[in-house]
Structure formats: structure tokens, C-alpha cells
Amino acid sequence: RIPRLREMVDALRARGDEDGAAESARRILEIDPADPEALALVEDRLRRRADWGGLRELLLSAARVPGLPVEARTARLRE
Image (cartoon, rainbow, N blue to C red; front, side):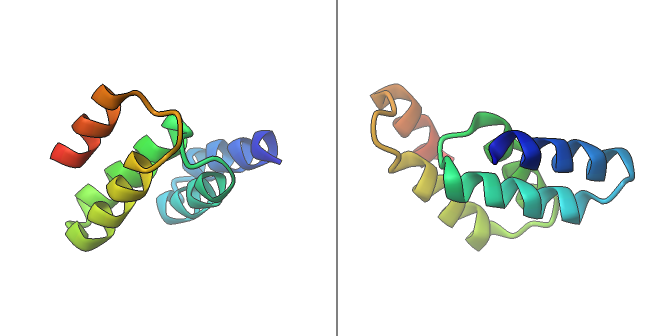
């Protein structure tokens, strides 16, 4: 399912549909909260929209992913 969602993200970005791409990336994060590509896309989108509350929630969720190295958790929480 994730490969198909990645294809959707790529296709939507190619068409200039950043909102649709971010939504598809969020769906990837529902399946795999540690996915670095999806996390980066959604994080960038939230920053550009100055959605600080949404960014906070995203980064907190990402920091709670089991198995994430301590350094990665710390970096996400510092954001």
C-alpha cells in the first residue's frame, strides 16, 4: 500500500497539487509513522503554512515512534 501512496505523492507533486501530495503523505504516516520522506513532506508543508500547532503534533508523534534512536527523538522534540 505504501508504494502505491508514494506513486500518488509523486504524481500529485508533478501536477503541482501540493495539498493532495501532503494528504497522501499523511496517509503514509498513518501506516508508517517513521517514514522519513512522508514526514519531511508534511513537515515542510506545515512550516510553509505556519501551522505551528499541526507541526508540533506531527513532530511529537514522530518522536514517539518505537525504536527511534534517542538522538532522533531529541532532534524532533527540539523543533
